[in-house]
Image (cartoon, rainbow over all chains, first blue to last red):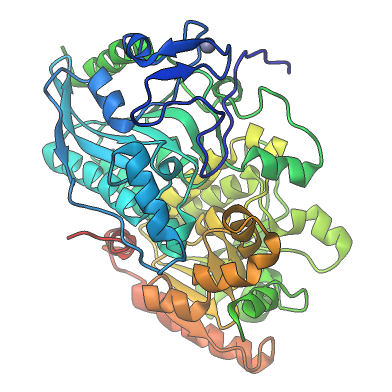
Amino acid sequence: MAINFPYRPKNELERHGRGGEPRHGEKELTCPNCHRTLSESILENNYYICSCGYHYRIGARTRIEMIVDPGSFEEMSESIKPNDPISFPGYGEKLEKARRESGEEEAVVTGKATIGGIEVMLFAMDPFFMMGSLGSATGEKITLVFERAIEEHLPVIGWSSSGGARMQEGLLSLMQMAKTSGAVKRHSEERLLYISVLTDPTTGGVSASYAMEGDVILAEPGATIGFAGKRVVEAMTKEKTDRSFQTSRFVFEHGFVDSIVERSDERRILYELLSFHTGR
Amino acid sequence: MTSYEKVKAARSESRPGALDYISNIFSSFIEFHGDRKFGDDGAIVGGLAYLGDIPVTLIGIERGKNTLERISRSFGSPNPEGYRKAVRLMREAEKFSRPVITIVDTSGAYCGVGAEERGQSEAIAESITTMIGLSVPTLALLIGEGGSGGALALMAASEVWMLENSVYSVISPEGCASILFKDAKEASKAAENLKLTAEDALEFGVAEKIIPEDNLGSPEFYSSLKSMMEGKIRSMMGRDDLAYERYLRFRKFGESR
Ligand SMILES: [Zn+2]
């Protein structure tokens, strides 16, 4: 099946894709797809979408501000920070670098907000914090979102953006897949809505847990979505993969995503979906 | 033994595989095939058997004994169909109030174009979610290698027991070494750092019990394991809080409160 898709950001662990992607504090950005350089303020006014359609990776806070009603976001669990549970060599420095690059303390920002006046619990992962890897504090913050949503009888919207489990936390990172899945399940059993939005990248342990467990699963255009890394698959099969392999379009065509939604249209779609489940 | 020696021991082809445990501990095993959606995965074997006189649902990951069998079982790396077969059998177990016992031995879920096309992520996520929420007793026995999400998919159990030389890890030591140390030859160092041995898992609360391997594969080994499993399963039967207890079992990892 030939799937023609013009751009495909790389998914490399611990790296920010191709050069020119936004880092905290940068002012001019060069599009990895069309190589056009645009100032950050122009991109900011266009949801960080290049004129060619390329969706830049964005930080968790930028994303939340873009979608929710202005001033409605109340953050929770800010005090939950990563520690170094298995004393993994170099993890401390990695965390330090992640804090600098993302301006965040963890790979996920969580809280409560309204969208078009409808209350919702939310979590947004930050690709600039260790490629959004899933550590114990990440899993804890996401679990708390679902638990509070159960208590307050609210829907959850979650933006995933992650290279997978955080290997520097060993088994405790792997356990977060089960822990968050358990929380999603309990939320679901209360007949509450969970909308999962897959953004670039959603792979490994995150795609194999809460990211794929939404009642509704949306994806941003051009995101890398899959289980195994592309290079792992190529090493295994000894064949080059297609450019379309593991893109949003690819998972959509294979039936794992409800809809591909442009970031500029996300707020409207999310509002519509929430409305269906809360009554107007 | 160093951690990496344990990894090698866990992968050793001479170790008993899931089907050895099934034939030596359980009786009247009837294998069920297929996910009712796409196909039958050779890496995951499942079906019904008796543990003593308790009817149970068994789900195991089998690597195979010889080259031909290993190929047909994709070397113990399940495809999405395998996890979907497991989910089907778990749901069936719940319907008939049968305990679920999983026997895990895999380097990880299969990595291939087809596996990605058929939704490996979704299949694993569904297996974890289904297993963690089961109302029936569940027990996972890790007999060799427990590789990442592909192993966890069948290990979201009420208790996890690990063989003395089994290993359970978020990533293979080789994979970890090539990403973090840019050199797969540093696998031994990575294995040490990843804290993937049975003792480590016990310390973290990721496993509840370590099964000694002094007489691995002998009749005494299987009969003592059988009586321990029977005792554990019996202690969970008839309880109605198993799903919640299991949620709390996993909830505690990295808990902030
Ligand atoms: Zn562009």
